[in-house]
Length: 231
Ligand SMILES: [Mg+2]
Image (cartoon, rainbow, N blue to C red; front, side):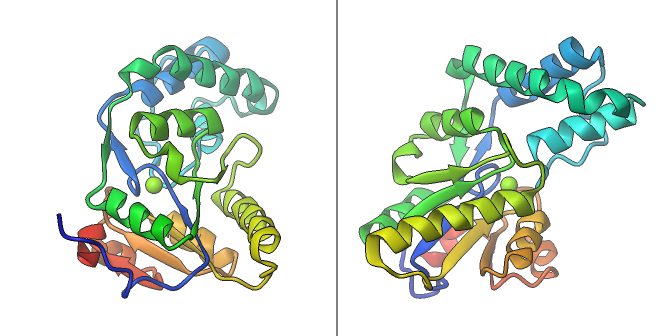
């Protein structure tokens, strides 16, 4: 197997990865059916996620978009905790059906970065328990020392900000380096914008639904068709 080189990567002490479309793509509908269950049982909405922008969105953001589309915005805030609890429960109940496909060469990249003692984390719009379940099913859980998710933050920008403060604290504790670079990797324009809003570098990887050209238009610091570009 050819080895990944990091010569072309943005140098950093910590790398924080988005999950869906960046580390893996789900071949199952476990997460989707958890949305459907929460919408049906908590908000009495039978429809699905049609016409809702899910890529680069967050779990609470997706629920909000559907609830507003159905004219039930006034119910959203007070019912959200029950909806999120039900989603976590549904994914846990069906976790044996999780069937993630790893993005090309991603595990080689993670191995390389771990071999260089980089701090690795995830920052995702998933709820935390759903994110960890997907990573475990993908065999990637053990690479990551921390995660930032949508349980307490609906906006990706906030999720990234929390990831940065966690990474910053861990790096400072480990090496007393409070200035180290923390680099993000994601597959959507939302990842690029969230990194920009937090003034940190970002690698865009076109392993989700966006093409390299679509991502490049948002001027990430590095833009890859997939991690095979690093082989
Ligand atoms: Mg993604």
